[in-house]
Length: 366
Length: 90
Image (tube, rainbow over all chains, first blue to last red; front, side, top):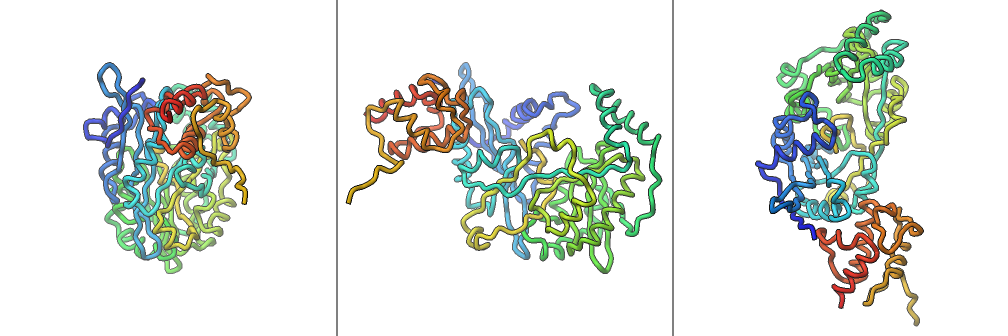
């Protein structure tokens, strides 16, 4: 009979766990793997506090070896003027060969019980996670939709060609895409709204972010907090993050976009917020964003949100200005099951508010 | 007044694989009962982690016992589950 034991993660386990994580997600090559430093940033530097993390071990030749893991990562949320602490499931796994020898769901249930009082809600992101976690009280909140907007008529063809040619080398693919993009660059028009560009070093100390969320949170419903500390943790100070922050301020409203530019030709809109949520302003700002991306040689920009993750009027604008990604048809849909604490259910009278969120909470999903 | 036999009947020894099949049939699972022989692993008959978990919960509820996570390897076939319960309940 195989012996198992479960316990809290210790500092000495981090390197082992990170190696297993990289192996499972297919990032064994050093260039693409998650570094220990990046893992520690997520685990220990979250403004909501350290991650609660547990491991499952089995005994192999008198040595205990990690075969499974579950973690809950605290993420600060706001609900009007109320501060909430939620948690996202992180790097949950049980190696396939142990799946009919150990009950992972019971283990997760025990982990959840241990820290339940700490969080107002817990949630998860992944394909098929709603069904699995329904036994733990999670209900599906929405499905992720990936939108895309190309800046050149042939951008899809260019990407297919580049993928075929540069299958083995990311840099060869990127080089080819840049060349193709430059052949038929479409002249970009002047935007009607002007965006201010901030680097990840400048953004945290900018005037814009010093009071943005203080104002915006009132009309945001239930939303991940977007204070300086939160955005630093998710983006600006996170190892490996490459991107630019664009802000907009006028008497009619304020907005920001955080654009990931790690892929030099396919940008990703990692987060955005518009306060107040005016569809017309959003429409104009998206135009300005497209011009900014196209001027820098991007072929397309992507954006991910969930079906119920934005006010309906803004989601409608997004659906008109961008198209659901073609790639989405070929991959299983990501779901966002969530589970509210008893206190939270009472506070909201069972009516679950809009969860204003974008790509940012998918970081390190498994 | 007579009591209708509900789905949550108590299990008594000896536990047979036929009885376990009856319990699975009452649950909303992906297990293909036609494919499930007494010694087939539940996973091989289409069960995922949720199905296994629900099956174990249903058994626990009907037997008044707890099957620890680490014992799951012994109860992942109908034969194994019947043997395990007959040992625990007798």
